[in-house]
Image (cartoon, rainbow, N blue to C red; front, side):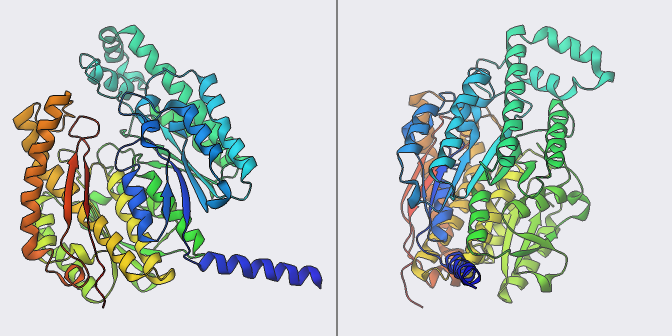
Amino acid sequence: MIRSLLFLMIFWSFSVTAQKPGKNRILLIPLDDRPPCLQFTQRMGQIAGAEVVAPPLAMLGQFTTPGQSEAIGQWILSQDLSSFDAAIVCLDMLAYGGLVGSRVHQVPLETAVKRLEIIAKLREKAPRLPLYAQSVLMRLAPSADMKNDAYRAQLARWAEISPDPSRQEETAQLAKVIPATALADYQQARLRNHTINQKAIEWVKKGIIDYLLITQDDAKPQGVHIAEGQRLREQIHQQNLQAKVALQPGTDEVSMLLLARFLTQKAAFTPKIKVYYSSDSLSKRAMPFEDRPLTTSVRYQIESAGATQVDKETDAQILLYVYTSRQQPQRAISFVNEIKEKLASKKHVIVADIDPVGNVQGGDSVFSALLIKHQLLPALSGYASWNTAGNTLGTALPQGVTYYLASQRFKQPKTALYSAQQWFLLNRVLDDYYFHTLIRPEANRRFGKPGLGALILDESRNKQVEAFCLERLQGYLKTLEQDYFTSKPFASFCQRPQHLQFSLPWHRTFEALIDFDLDCSRKN
């Protein structure tokens, strides 16, 4: 009888905690210091009233300068781990100093394994702390760093075709033009990373890691990564870890997915999501830089965010609209009308605008302009349109899940909720659409290499490009006055954004840090 009462008290206590919004504190070891890995995750946490705590920025490195793995490990142990509700740890930062560091063989396997012992120490110090981890399955191409311009494309091609017996002659020719040391370094880095991924799965089996996402960085439907992924899947199945380990496309966005997963588990609630595609045929194809059909990627992203996909809208709390019809402008009109209808009926709607060709970094001009014109963007639960399908889905989905939980389950105070939610939506519009689609190509043409090139800059030119982009962004911000800022979801609560800031943290135009102040303190 006493044992039964004790069990009921523990269960009741856990249930109350699960539903309580509180001031959740989450320890984050990001993949690197780029905005998607750090700024986005911290800002998304604010939507649910969560404080996401990361190591000092100086420890995280910058581009080809790796993060300070040992110092980060000591920083973790110096924290009061009892003050955190969860930990999100990107193993590549601890092992190699970040994503770019993971693509070269500067860190031997033995050193990487030793650095990752901090995970076991974290578990020893905080045995009940939920620990979510990410480990990356290396992409085909090495990072562009100006040193490898002469052979980078050939190395990526070698990685794509070398497993194919019918391509032996082409593979041999490529090997002749790739420096032997560069090819050896690439192969050693892949082998080391694969070994770490295998060990990460073992750590899940041992209970050191609670949930693991192994994420496939930029890839194609064929290449050296296919066999690596297959071996990892076999290991996951052999150890019956399908509920605790997933292997899916994407990389930069993963800490946001893990944040959403923690919040769903904190709420003891699994949101149900119904998916609508603008094109059935394109939904069955692999998107650029990915190795599986879009429908499969979407399902994996939904599940890793702690949600589940349903077939009927009547069973869903959230609707996900996936736009891929950039070659069909008329479909943009009808798709926007469908979204408009759902928002008018008070549905929680997420929009993911995905480039199915791979020649545009940001949002589709026609589709984005219609969303702005019809004043739909401020009413969305989640939105993104940057880079790969995985990046876009892995930003929009967790935002939508987080916003739903904050508004419906946690009952986040409206001032904080709207300020954080509207900041994130507006940041996506400024970054994904205005910067990446409109400003970035202009900056690349004016200051250097056109197209999707990273456009690596020296200090002086970096400042020139930043000033140019900030001026353009301020101009586009003014154009939002008519449609965006007068929309009911925005105008009812929020003041105009102030103190717009813009920078290129990695001295290239591939990613931008955009910030501003937004006050949504008006009462209903």
